[in-house]
Length: 389
Image (cartoon, rainbow, N blue to C red; front, side, top):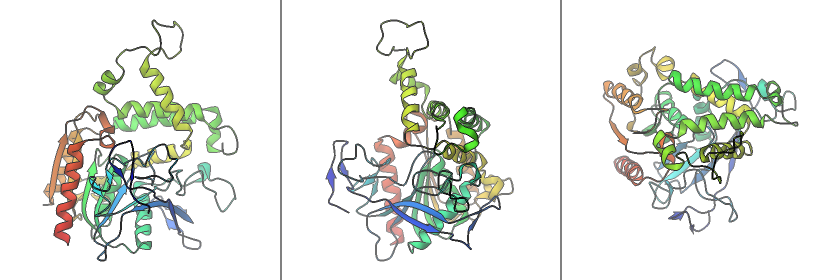
């Protein structure tokens, strides 16, 4: 890793980082998925930052959300226009201090950012999997991450941290591998999707599958379902913001116009913004991966999969200390869901801290600069590290 680099985004970046790869589940030993389907070989893209200490007691596992990837912080090259997706939080002297901790972030299976997913080559056919890729779950994603940590020789994790779908993975980690996890920070997440969240995901999926270019997932090498994927992203982006954020950012301001066009151009700034977000998304993400990951999120139900229908029973095996964080304006995963999670944890006499942070930016608040969030994470990690060492 190179020397630290000062960037105009503010603060000190961790500098140059490298995308790495780990392949496992080679035939004849594929990974058995929760659906009972087999998958292999599996490649996991991942990134490490900082230095692993002699005791291997400073490991932080960061888990990304739907469209994220393993590139959590730093830069791949001097020419990169922007750093990893959580560079504001991860780096020297930041909330997750890479001078103190060894950070690992891997790309989930089912994605299109280096890990095995629908756009990967199916060894049985020599063509991209497409819709032949098996449905994966949050549990399958975590099982694959466990294989990576085994490969790295890690048997104890100081903290697992993630927001949104990454937070679901955090919860899965603490109940699936309780002996490995010392502490956990689930951010802006839930133990299971509400009907509202499932509904928005279904609308987004239908937008993709209604695109003629989707062709039942067999669009690789031809025209892609860009219109459907862009629309899916627009729908999703609305759920990530809040009414207050929309009002402050856009209001009813017009986009480079003095009056209405009286046609169906993007008259309003918010229309132009959503169209732009949709277009940018199709340049970097795969439509099939969007389908698979949103389905995995909808299937996730901690109480059904680990608690026989009881949220309290779902946490019965957990041993970690928790810092649960929600945001006041997050209407996708509202605070009442985090409070229910905390209540279930406390019924098991777990060490739980909870904070609802005042934030106007909606669900995406955990990805934006917030001094209180950084301070909470820094303090929580520091206390657990000091006690473990």
